[in-house]
Length: 313
Image (tube, rainbow, N blue to C red; front, side):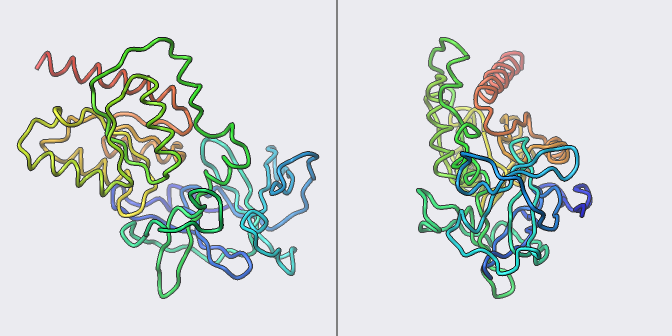
């Protein structure tokens, strides 16, 4: 069945809230950002693919598109359902790709403030940083919000950020400009910093979410120093605990001291609807992960424009 029209469910821009679709696997409650969900469908048989990753269940073609099915129970090390005929496919879209995630049931949708979502402080369900991007407490239950991008990048590393992509930009010198990064994924923030350093942007400040980035900007304002002496551009994810990238963008662009600071939204969620939200909030540019070389080119352009504007002004 078709899901709802995205324009009907997306929240007012910059409210620091998100809609979570709750689903279960073996009775445990998990969540996915509704902005990623294209539709939900009843389970249907899939075509097996030889030599595929063990958690890839196969492929199916609901209409005119072949979609890869990922068995979340197997990925998480949880038992399969007792009655697969009642299982659900969540068709998700991010990084400009569609995937079907095989789950056991869909429970509903709740609106939650990012402030009520905590970053896990220990590894959950194995694997490096852990596969939970946040833990939400809602009506006396804990919802594990899964990091779907990390799941996909583990299955297919080519879908993630590639350090080598910077090399297509050719020889580059170092820049003294300071880039403030807001990214909650330890793995992705490390990759972004490494890529920026490789591209010559060696002065980076890394924060784990929008709130930390905003606190840093507020410290700059309180110091009385010119903003540009501490930071020249902001690169922010959208999905982050405590404060999301849309809220951070809204705060920056509504602040008289900070509004000229270029802001780039760098997120797997960038699609037509989300792009409209970002534009409404005043984001200077938006680009989908993992296009790191394009991100660097945008940084080059925005910093050059900002320098020209300051010279003219």
